[in-house]
Image 1: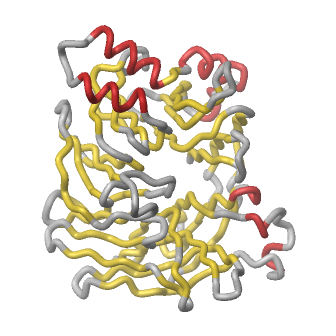
Image 2: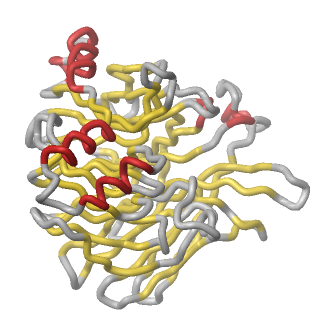
Length: 365
């Protein structure tokens, strides 16, 4: 499994972890690559090309934070060498706005010049990467999408589209979520247009066209469109799902009488039950911040999200006695994986800010 994360705070310090799950009961960090001048927002493992592509923001020579992407080869865990990885990352490092500017100069007659100007003038950060013929790299805030070739040395085309937060792939389509109206969309393979699927509601800063708030999206179901559904997190608007066929959606945005902020979601099918995992934090009436994760069963027939249980990161709980900086934890990334020998048993990974990556074993009945 591959994980990208950042430390909490203003400093640009991120990392990539490659975790060995060959022993379900004893996962180990096989390799960790740390960055002292970059935040890593997104990571994509391309099995077809045997490489890992990632992006975020990096401090340039003028100490200004700018969007970037890079990549390194990954054939198997035994092929990894930190020196080789470092060299490949440096050789493949691309500053996205520079590439868009170069493409604008070269292809001035072949695509919308305003799209390029929008992306060049706006404050941006890389938030999503996916692959289908091209590497699709998304820029949040007043951003859009840049389609890179396999070598990451040329932008083939761009699309201006406000505030793209995340991408997910299904068959030959790239799906995503935008902070502008909370739009779910898809990009047809090889096409230079975005097709809106559904507006699920603006979130974060409701007074502008973009927000610093995080949003994520993934899909669950077997085929398009009859059994195709989106699971998403929407920051201050909680998390929820949208069913394409029934055109129904459900949102969970309150816990113990408090409005939650949702930073990430994950999905598992357990005993034919659709289970959603959500990370959150909230501020109670006494201004106390609580954070953790919740577990829900998705029941599409009843259009409901049934709460199964929650876990609050509590430094007074003996479970967390060896976890540092828990008071400053800010859980966002969440990933779940079924155990190979017990499909009712779930291994869950939670990125918790300065507390690092927390591992949980869950038994769901």
